[in-house]
Length: 268
Ligand SMILES: [Zn+2]
Image (cartoon, rainbow, N blue to C red; front, side):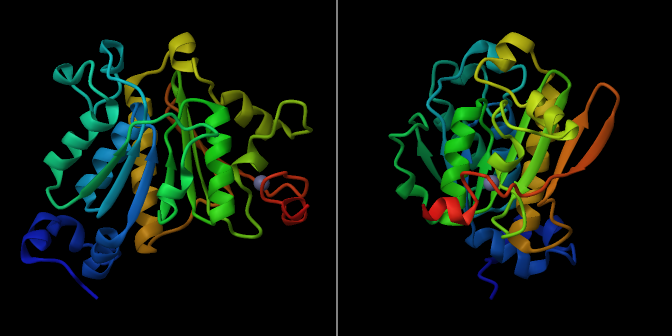
């Protein structure tokens, strides 16, 4: 199965030596297509680590340009890339870490006009976005196309991450983050309250390493999904409190009335 060259085996030696990954897992990473929505703080960490880890095909989607105030946390970018598109800036850094990675950049907003067909062949979607409306669009695409979605968010000193893998008994993003007028239990209320919106970093602030922690977790969980090692975080919401250095694991369940993943409502 291995389609790795001697150069690649040398490049990824510290990872290939792990029995959980081995040459077989490294070859799976090389064959994988991962699409990253947003190359801000979360996407910077995720894209750099996934490129470095040897994922073969990365698609980076973002319509923003690099600004000075991004550099405090969006470490894929640099002073020299201010004013450039974030996808090109991040692609350059990824390529510097791994000359074998193929990168596609999409410098467009993700809204109802976005051409999701162009990313139909993705093996995994990473939600590194900063607003709920776009997250819901991406979730709908994930459910419709049955492509797993790794979603994370970060604000202030806090962050959250979960995997929505389209298991028939596991929740989708919309099951967990239901609109505010829906009935929810206390823990999910907390989860929703911590979900951000488009201006969250601007209005509420965020500590750079917190987006690094969550973006790195997205990269780690991506490697696990693609190689099949370890325990899945599907059905679990991991909540990070950076101020008090704690992780909390909340079990999250599928909602029978979810308008996105409930099969009966999808048919109607
Ligand atoms: Zn759902």
